[in-house]
Image (cartoon, rainbow, N blue to C red; front, side):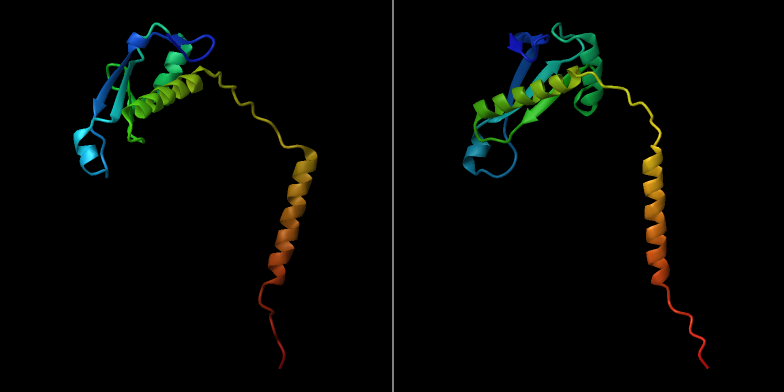
Length: 141
């Protein structure tokens, strides 16, 4: 079991790894060794995800989820397969933690009387400053 939060535990059999060759520079090592990790996690059919977190995760990571509901995370930051595997798991855990938070609805508020007065004074001050920058109309002949 992979403990994400107090309430969310994922079975390790739900997470599948595929090791691929890493792109970019690295010489012969990068051409021979499959150090990049592609993590696949079935969001739609996971038993460890609460429904609210599942819906939020689907909207948070919508670009990384295919039509079957499988989330794909590719990690190739490190030269080591083990470090890339840990990085992919950490990124999955981070996404799930972010999806488990409750979003507080925003309530519209009115500006206070003092803030409106300050805003008006600032506008007047700025207007006066700009008026002083205007060219002087000279009528001297």
